[in-house]
Image (cartoon, rainbow, N blue to C red; front, side, top):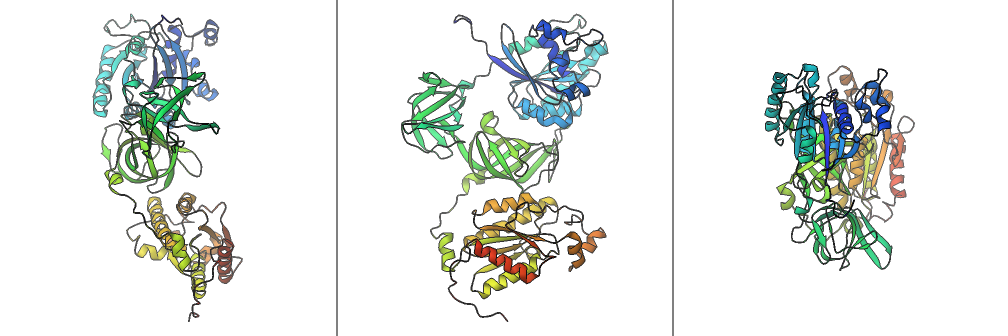
Length: 622
């Protein structure tokens, strides 16, 4: 390209809609008619009867060809004299909605396809709603397979009216509606003759005419991807500029810390630049020695970023297992990953009617508005302002699978009004007064495994030694602090969270805290571990086979559960996930309660929780 040739901007767009609406065929035909397919590749598209199957250009997976559906997101690149394009063919099947959301997250435009024979379907609406949520700026409705309804204007008008009414209610940009056929190519690149009643533009003309996205019009933002320290004389911060322009000498602010400095150098491969703009990857150095880490965000000092730890966000749930309020997930926003809990579901959206529905959980492909609480402040912008700084994913902490994708709407007001109070007396001073070190001993196991018996014995013996201990028992907790909770999965998670918060505060006071709770899910036990200092938490698996625990059945609970009188009973109608690597494994069908209690105390000594001599000896308990 010569210097006199104007630079062509790039448009990223997706095709989406319901399954079998002809997305792959449309893209294949568009690429072919735009001259983006080499002759030798065209020859490979012919079927046994010599006809061209344009869908083969994008249906690359063997499973896609066998089933005749799109599963993965297929990206293709082509250009015309007016513009360069990156097109993502996204799957229409409901099972792969998460893949569609991935493709839409970086798109500037969406081509929503509707089969002329079927009209607007639920998946059409779901995909369109996601397009709206993800802030896609331009929408084109392509009514496909018009050749199969004899290019009926009535059929086209009915679909256009139905979709335009939905689009207005869903807050979509006003769509351009085009009748097309992927098989014949009518109204894709060339104007079709079959629909004499249509006088609008072709699909390619619409895509070429969409206005470019001006990322440089917004303030400077750059998420720090890494710290570049090749030697003692150089420290730079690398990343891709999200928006705006940065120049040598500019004042910048670091979020969430708020520290400020000035840009000293803008370093790229091959040398330094006087300035850089959105889309460029650079390394910045500063005039001052400041603390900047991966995941921080650099911003123009006169337009600093907000930071908070509580948000309202729109969430698309992407996991087979339902979302559970209170469960701790990892939230990844930009290059920063922090623990996060969904504290409240404001509503779930009915994608057909846009109705806001009450919900206690979200299932696969559900879309809801939720409140989230994070473990620490993160820098952000509302998604509608800046996609990359307002989008996040939720990750299951055990499987590492992505379970949700979200868009930040705003920070909750309480996130700004509540501040931690600095306290001068710390946990080590409190523990030293008691001649011990704080610990949380978390006893988990089936009902009837012996947890409470062992915990009682441990507390009794520690007290006899003059130690300061306290037992939090699950049954007692539900008579007070958790009396408002039931036994659904979400209620159990909340019950464990409350017990953990109490245990954490008691440990902060220097106590040895014994917690006896079934706590059946690994995710919640990991949540508790993460809340405590590394050396203060001991997970004790009180292990009794189900048959042994049920035979004991001191409280008669198993019998009630077997009769169907107790729902969600662990071991019968609800699962128990045993610890993979407990700090102590007690097999209570092979040892006495006294032996188990001594093993717990020995483990506390090994963990150096009982190294100091107690300040006094407690008289024997009667």
